[in-house]
Image (cartoon, rainbow, N blue to C red; front, side, top):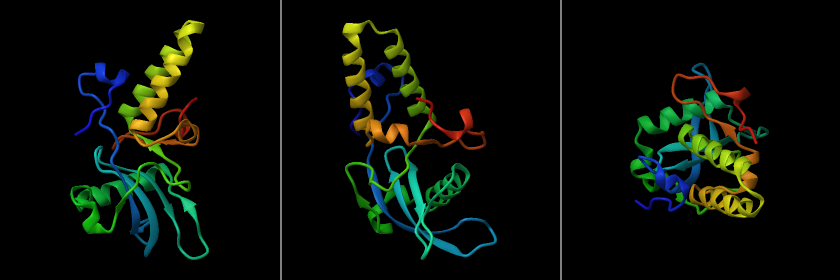
Length: 168
């Protein structure tokens, strides 16, 4: 596995570079409804669903944090991340334009740490910290634009922090 060579490398367990796969998945939005067609992006290195959107006829909507967690649980239970191409997923280098990404708790912690470096940086060091942040985001398949439109995906059994959105 390719590990990021940036500030996350000083963690005990570095954050793996993303291995993004995208495709379609039938998923019920609640236990009482029929499955609907969703387009999904999964990071098989993490493994977790990064983004998902319902694309049923006449309906296009992003999945909320709870729905995203349910979809993630369902896909992991079927071991989709172990052989994603067998499930019809295809590799992608970065998030598709439609995706509203989510971050894992570890990725959020790393972004918050980078934000701390940025707020403490001297004027001559700000560009270097921004480059580190951009390298980290590229390594997990995202851009700074994705960071500002992302949602937090809560860890299993916990509530989202700060209203479910990534603070900038």
